[in-house]
Image 1 (cartoon, helix red, strand yellow):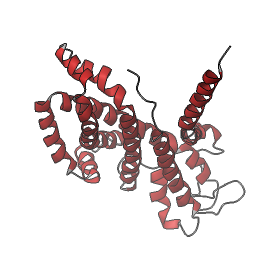
Image 2 (cartoon, rainbow, N blue to C red):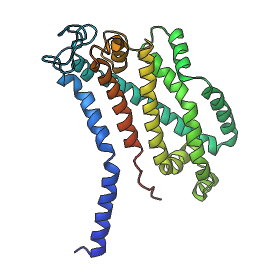
Image 3 (tube, helix red, strand yellow):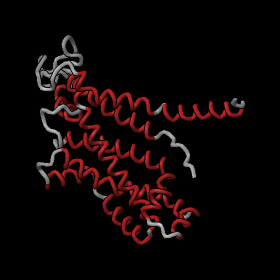
Image 4 (tube, helix red, strand yellow):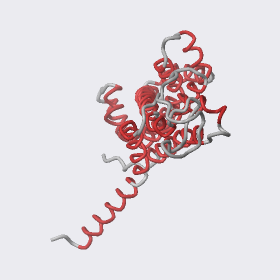
Length: 277
């Protein structure tokens, strides 16, 4: 039979988990809708169904685009590639930065080299770096953008992780692990990263959002996805000349990009549970 104290603790724990789970709900719903979008689309992405820049009406919920294609159908098809690419970039940058940042504080000599390299790399603007990679790899398409975003995103992320891990590196349990002769990788995985869950999760959210904007900017500059692909950023660029005729052709994909960034950022900013030692 549970005591009143036990019941109170259980209720408090449930409230804590509910508060942590609540910010995840909008992102889960939006990502689920975006990934399931192609199955819900009433038309194919390349079939003209209305007049050019037709306003919202029968047969086209959000009207037509510059070729008379259904804006709603293209919107439903346009999120999967963007989400997948942004997730890949965010995960690759965060994982690499987590390992390198922890290594930098555990091995000060290597850390100084990493920090100086990161300082130089941070000076290169992301858009310029993407353009350079696209010129050197003209057939790279999305992979050129992904590669450039990963390479250019790691330096800043390394500095963030290193700054968060520096106080932990002086903790007694880390010093004890070093005295036992454990490898830097083992200490990173077993001692540092469990205590950096909040930082790493928030960093992934920031890198994901940054990747969304980098991919969208590259698409707007005609780097990456090409017509007739259904891509939110590509839809914005293609339909910008007709924004006064059918505003939904531009506003709908713009809102989708913004909502994607906001919901994921809120989800990854949720407080992580305290580490147990």
